[in-house]
Amino acid sequence: MKLLAITIPLLVPTLLMAGQVEIKEVRSRMDTGGLYRFDVTLEHADTGWKHYADGWEVLTIDGALLGTRTLYHPHVDEQPFTRSLSGVAIPANTRELLIRAHDKVHGDTLIKYRLE
Image (cartoon, rainbow, N blue to C red):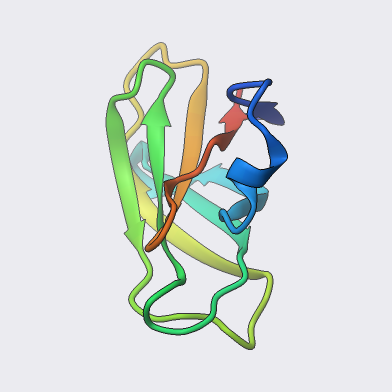
């Protein structure tokens, strides 16, 4: 799979995206048994327990959830940071996936990563 960044939607005002989680990099590889591992690097202005990046998801292009990586604590002094998720089953004939991040205040990111 190659990594391509896409912006959704293209006309979102910059102020709406301020403070959201930014997906900096995504790496994927097939592990044993045909399951996949994803290494996702996030950057976010974590301020503490009330406002931090709290997870990311692997989705099909039509929105079916394939895997969730929950982040259980803030990373105030560790930015950007990378966390992994293994054991993700990808349906046969899937050619594209999305990675969507989340934070406690803003919810899901408006900018996602597309993997081909």
